[in-house]
Length: 171
Ligand code: SF4
Ligand code: SF4
Image 1 (tube, rainbow, N blue to C red):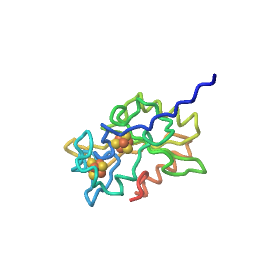
Image 2 (cartoon, helix red, strand yellow):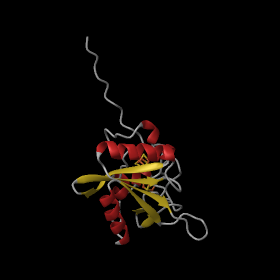
Image 3 (cartoon, rainbow, N blue to C red):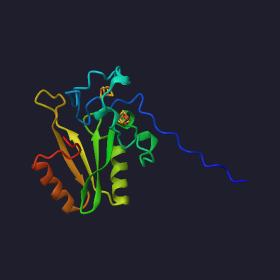
Image 4 (cartoon, rainbow, N blue to C red):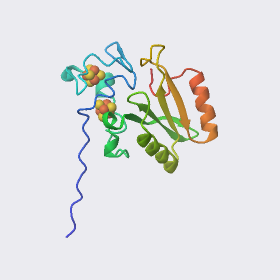
């Protein structure tokens, strides 16, 4: 007798708060969260005002790990793998461009290697970043962007960054 295919359970954010903690640089009710400046409601394991969280960005934002049918493996949950992936944030010559942001100074090698391989196997150019510390060595809003893909993509990504446009948010 054929077995019923089990529907995968939706992934749950808790106890991750990587987006609330500013790694993706969001504005919540006028408060700007960025690396080292988490949303004041983040407890580091959840939100202390969850029922009143605003629609934007809190209820709308989903990272690439939590989306339905995410290709990211379980171990790449942002608080564990120290990387947050945003799929399809831009287009380049008809190809979807994914963005990966570190949850910390830089993306750990295991996760970065996985992402590079995924980009190559699926023809999806990748942009990933590394935090640039301020003069005191603290986190800042500045990030070094690295483009992984064809040389022409790398050239264009340099131009995007030089032009000052945000590579992953619509702000
Ligand atoms: S980074 Fe992803 S998994 Fe973590 S809290 Fe935000 S949406 Fe959920
Ligand atoms: S209000 Fe809550 S859900 Fe929204 S960013 Fe802050 S901690 Fe996260």
